[in-house]
Length: 328
Image (tube, rainbow, N blue to C red; front, side, top):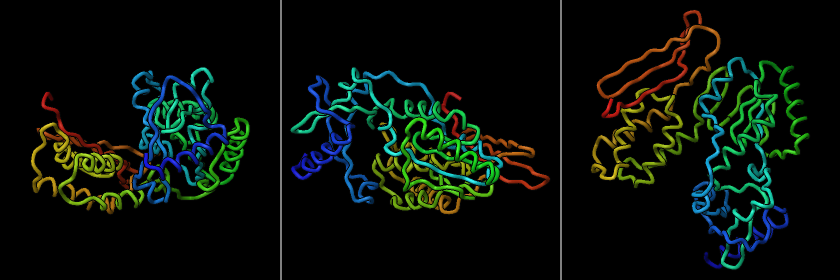
């Protein structure tokens, strides 16, 4: 860690000490802390101190509580016309760690060693543990709330029921002493952004920033890391892209131990995915009406589309696509 980063880290740790989030320790455990300069941190103008908990994660038992898939969450929104969104401030830091277990979270700087009093970022079990805690706390509202780790979306069919829902939500927040981010709170909107999707009028589509992120990539000569990043974004919006596996399977070949050389097929797949992502179709949230599942397959690929038929008016609810394995 360079002198300027060390100075910044000491200042940050002093603030964490003041807030009671960390404490000094002489634990026999210690993971390395360092700064990352990812694009998101550069945009907000601040470096982020992280702890490499890979050594500790090797010894942690998995927590099996499920973190829901976003597209499954959105299927719970039929009939919703008014929304409110909340972000739990500090997320994992709102869950304390038993004093007898804190030594395991120890991390070190070149001149100090600390341990967390709260659940730190970087533990492999943190997302599922937090999801479990928040889901149990807000269990009475699950019929009208989507919970994805530290993001909560309240939804109602009308304004009257939404006001009542908001009161119930704030009663629970006050009961458990939960801290919300005032800056990120949005209340009583007919359309809203949630988990990278724009939700309005019984439909949802990817937020524009996802398409912009794809355009930031070149058209060829990706590094392995760039291929992984590109496919990660595409997979998040794959429900909106018909025949998506035709394109992603070409790019996935670049992640093999012995990848093929770059060719026109890779460039074409990248350009096609960028093009489709610029104007993806909105997907209808299934509600009343007839649902039709259309399927198709070739020797290599399989595909399906879910369609809602409401009195002769048809709209798409989602696409699915895959490539058969050699054994299939």
